[in-house]
Image (cartoon, rainbow, N blue to C red; front, side, top):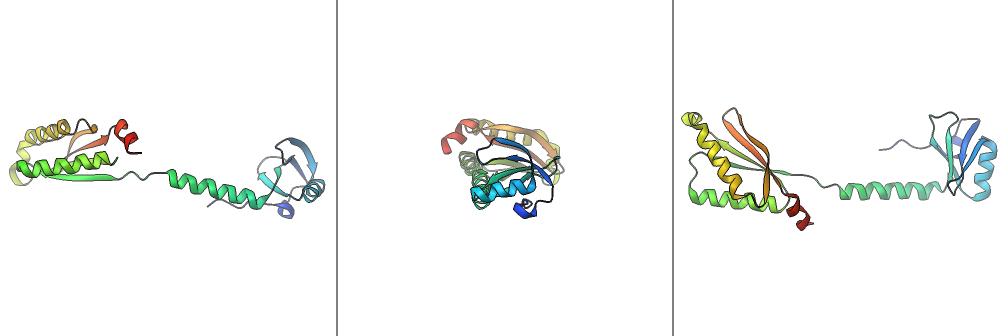
Length: 176
């Protein structure tokens, strides 16, 4: 949340640098005169920049200003898309049918705009065959090359080998 701006009588400075309701700079004005101008125009005197010397104050309708600010923040939150990372796990001895099913899931993830982490789990003595794991990751990357590109090259992490694939920009635009 944002800190509350001081308005009207809450402003403590004796002099303020004033900006009128049209955005034009009036200059350095005594606080009483600035408050009188605000009352005459039916607006609020809002302290925009309290840290400057003298503080910058602007004439505006504070309720409307707060509403517009909340509206902008809500719009920004709505535009913000959460990037999900989906994960698909393979074993080194994956059967062809299982392989095709999992690659189909990866394709769907990429089409929906999700980054996908592909993990190959090595069990027991399979750790000696890292080259086969690398070959499997290369095969997966080739099978989904039209939908995504390799974002992170294959890495070994403990008993796992993983790689990250991101959807291509072209596919993301088609979705939106």
